[in-house]
Image 1 (cartoon, rainbow, N blue to C red):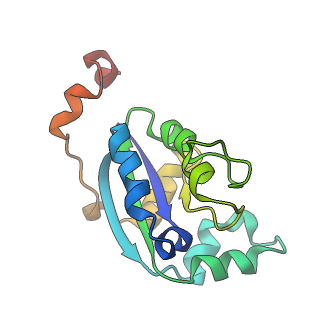
Image 2 (cartoon, helix red, strand yellow):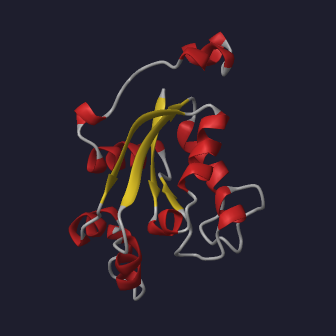
Image 3 (cartoon, rainbow, N blue to C red):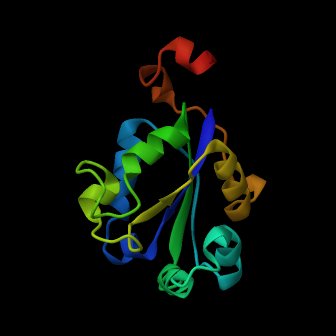
Length: 155
C-alpha cells in the first residue's frame, strides 16, 4: 500500500480543526500508519521547503510553521498520495473547491491547514524526514475488506 505524509499546520491546531480533518481521512478509508506531535525547527523546515528557501516569502513560512507544534501523520491506502491530494484541494484556500479540506477550512495560500505530499517519491522522502522506522506501523485494519475489492488490494 502506498503511504503519504500529512502535516497538520499550526493553522489547523490553533483553529481546532485537527479532529474534523482527521475524521475525513478516516472516513475515506485511509489507515493511520504513524502520528505524532512535534515542534518544527528552522533546520527541518529548510530541508522540507528547500524549493522555497530563496523566495522572498520564505521567512513568513518559517514563522507560520513554528508558531506552535504541528502534528505529522503517515497515511496508507491504495493511491494514497493522489487520494489525499484530491481531498486537500488547491494550495490557495480561496481557490480550493468546496468540499476539499482547504476549500472548506482555509482562506489563505499560506495558512492552508495541512501539507500533503505531492508525489509517491516525495512522500517517501518526507516520511523518512519526520518518522523513524519504528514509529510507523504496517497493519491491516479489519475494515480493509469493506474498503477495497480483492483485486485492488492485490494490485
